[in-house]
Every structure is written in structure tokens, then in C-alpha cells.
Length: 357
Image (cartoon, rainbow, N blue to C red; front, side, top):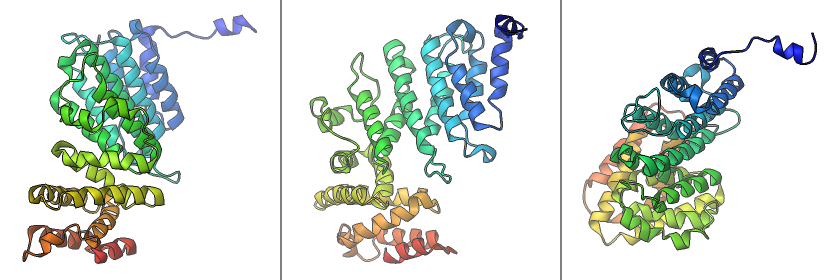
């Protein structure tokens, strides 16, 4: 049989068979198969998703998780994030609805959790930081979902969730990849400046609007380190954001790209020099810096760069005031952390950086 007859002879899938078939393919050992079926699920119409929404979301959330056997499947995780976001837009929001019919109080938390987990995807392979595409998709999806909720059911945006979104995005806006930094800044400013209605629970909204006035931001090139870092380091003065921005800056200041290192370092020095006469501000900054170090002990992606950053801060006299006091907590704790970091290490770069500190 040829032509249209050949097509008509193929068995068709009924709706109740289609989704289970697609979901089964999400467990494929082939990354591209997962990508294709994730994208397909993301384009399903509302009538096919209703009654099966929770099943679909559960399958896609599983795709976004990292496991030892599929750690390199970054594109599949990215497409899983995108599909979740599209489905949220398709089915809409009903605060007291059922999780099989719409986004509601019962399922919004697990979706937010999956998208926020994507912000921590720093997997690497021979291609480099492949997790960056997941982080980028996670930021877009978080923005789209939050804007959707703000316009329909803002009560579903919990304060801790909004805080974590803004902080995680601020961290990405402080990091070294130009594309990711620019996208993070776009997401951050979109959420900050959205006013139809405003996003609830944005931490330090008043201060942020003064630091990043809408009228000035349109002309900023966030891919340019010379423009981005002087702006983003202003967040170090806001307690809620300080930890995350320092975490991002640690990777940038201790990075490899000359322009990124120069401008992130200069911006960081200017901030720290500006708080030298404020013991409380300097104390808060130093305590947060120690916390970042402690939380990332033996995490080479962060700790090696952080040691380089600490060395530069110390070499430029940023903490000289602490050396006037015998056994100052900062000095003692920093020494302890350095010892812990290099214990039994054979990493020459790490050892040299630690010795310098």
C-alpha cells in the first residue's frame, strides 16, 4: 500500500494511550529521545492534559533531576524545564483546583522546587559547563511561572519561594558566563519591575528599585563585565542577597577570563573599601564570606576560585583592621577552613592558592 493508504494503515494512539507512551520515552537511555518527548509533552493541548496533569508533571520533573547514569543529559533536563513551563501556561491556575486539572495549591510547590533545583545544575563534561543551559531554562521558567501566578493567583507565590528565586537569579547575575549573567539580569529586573500587579514578597524591593531604576536599566549591557559588576556588587549591601552574590562573585573573581576577573575584582574591592569605616558592615561581609567558604568546602568549582578571591582581598588590605586584634575570629576561622580544604589534597592549584591566603 502506498501514499495516504500507507499512513492510514498505521495504528493511531488514543489520548489515554498517547501520554503513557510519551512518559515512558522520558526514561530512554538516549538524551535526544528524552528531549523530543519532553518537548512533545510541552506542546499538548489543554484537553489532553486535563485529568492527566499530575502524571505528566511527575514524569517531566523526573527528567529534570540529575542521576549518576544521565548526568550528561543536560539538554534533556533543559527541555524538561521548558515543557513544565509551557504546560503551566496551557492549563492555567486555579488556587483551589485539583492537581490533575490545573496549577493549584497542591502542585505548585513541587513545580517550583524542580525549577529551583535546576538553578544548581553545574554539571560539566568535555563540552564544558553544560549545566548552564539548564540554569538558563530554569530562570526563564521561574520567571514565566511567577508572572503567570502574579496575574492570576498571587497568593500562590510564597514568600520563601520568591526570596529564593530572587537570590538564585542574583547569584547567576554575578557569575562569569556573559550569556547567563545577561539572562539572569533580565529575569531579575523583569520580576522587580513587573507592575501588573507587582510580584509579591520581593526582598528589599524599595532598595532594589533605587539601585536599579527602570529608566536606567534599558541601556545597560549585562554581557559587558565593565557595566555588569559595578551594578551587581551593590547587592552586597542587602543582607538577603549578600551570600548569593558573594557566591557568584567568588567564581568570577577567581575565574579565568581576564575581563571578568578585572571588573569583578575591581567592583568587589570598591565595595569592601567603602565599608572599612563601618565595623558592622565589614563584620557582616566577612562572616558571610566565611559561611560561603564553609558551605563549599571541597567543592572545587567554588573553593579554588574562592581561595583566589580571598588572597586578593587580603593582599589589598581589605581585612587589615582584623589583624590589629589578636586571634580575631575571622582570621582564626579562615585558617581553620584553609586547613580543612587542603587536607590530603594533591591539587597543586588549590595548595598554592591556600598557601597564598
